[in-house]
Image (cartoon, one colour):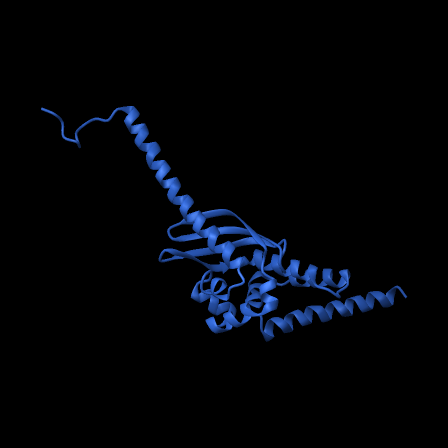
Length: 207
């Protein structure tokens, strides 16, 4: 009597083929997720369309933390100066996906943050991926490359401000980076003022 399908023994070759096929399916799924993640990151960091930057790449929680609301995000990202400061291209590497969440590393080329590099996290919202958080490493990198590109500031003053901001603990720095309001402005002004005083003292000593 022939064995049932469940009872039939499969040859080692058939088993190996099934394992390879399953592995290929899993790889294809993983590559699909990675492509989607790369796509949303590149679009969010290079697009000049506020809808793509705001609703298209950020979770509502992160958008609210950075901008306050969608309207404010559109106003900020719609400004001409902000649009032309967007990256020209973005390299995405180190993508890791697990249970609807992911991490990735971006390297920015062109724009105000040319040369910045760091990690961020994402989450799947339905069928789409959205950025949930930026690492303090990425935020610090963006600040320092922006500072290096700033015009009209002496190299010594830039180095002093960079050192002063590095001395701020990660939690405070991240809060200031997202705040982008009076508190962040005042803290940066304090660092700049201390640097001016140090430079003035040094100049007086060499006279």
